[in-house]
Amino acid sequence: MGNDALDRPLTILIPAYNPDEKLLALLPKLKERFEHIVLVNDGSTTGKEVFEKAAPLVDTVLVHEKNRGKGAALKTGFAHIGNATDVITADADGQHTPEDIAKVAEGLRSHRDGLVLGVRSFSGKVPLRSRFGNWWTRWFFFLMTGLMVRDTQTGLRGIPAALVPRVAKLPGERYEYEMAMLADAKHHPSRPLQVPIETVYLDENATSHFNPVLDAIRIYRSLFQFCISSVLSFLIDNGVFAAVMWVMAAKDTPRRNDVLVALVAARVISSHFNYFYNRFVVFRRGDGERAGAHRSYYGYFGLVLAVGAASYALTGGCSALLDVQGVAITIVKIVADTVLFVVSYLVQKKFIFRRR
Image (cartoon, rainbow, N blue to C red):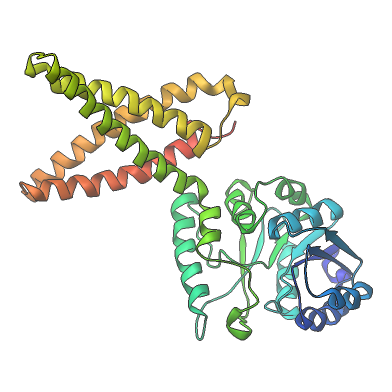
């Protein structure tokens, strides 16, 4: 199948970091099917001969002087290609067969308003880190976006020409960029088309540069920061409460007012810390977005009141419904607050601190 079969120009984009002979085995087969191939050398420290042999088989080899990450390599390729052609991204490690790349190209013929993803089934002999990495990122991604993508780690993606400028502007330099591309897909006119492909792992996936722990932290940076924000707010809340109670006791203030004053002071200080930390650190809405500051401020504290009321209602209601007492009520509250924690994160991310 060539470009004529697609009735529109198509470019294969391959980011490569320290590639080996597998790339050289792939390129001639791709050249038989596709007219345009762009290769990005992402600051490789080995594989010089591979790039020299690959050069005659591709349109161009773009070079990063130092390793900048897969996301940066893809964006360099998108910038070079522009929106004149559809683009299919493929990995350099041999995991994507020419036949599967052709399947994605075929999907692009009819699916013009969204991504086309080559997705693996993860059945049979699959390296543990790949199976685990995909399982938890798949469900976490669904929780965060509402999109069920069967293979969140796939590097085989078809991007219609009209969407190339959009995906080229997404944040991220490494693997988190690919996740940002998937998350952005919920805003496309059409949901991603998922095309089943072969699951290929060579040498237990030893050539993969994906780290399921470190790259997961990059991918879900905002959620981890949100957890840190919550822990710090908890410590501040209890620290202020203890400090105010100590001051009240030292001044011999009537005890019936101690707890109320301490609670109010602690909650006012900790909630303001939480608001500013979430705004400037977690969701990175800085001074450049002052126009929406009042809106986010009132929205945040409206959410604080709503979450507090919901926590009270859920804890009291479920405790009464389940007829539990003592320590069991605390367990009910923990479960309720865990659910509300996720809800609070999603509301802040999608509404209160979203980019406008």
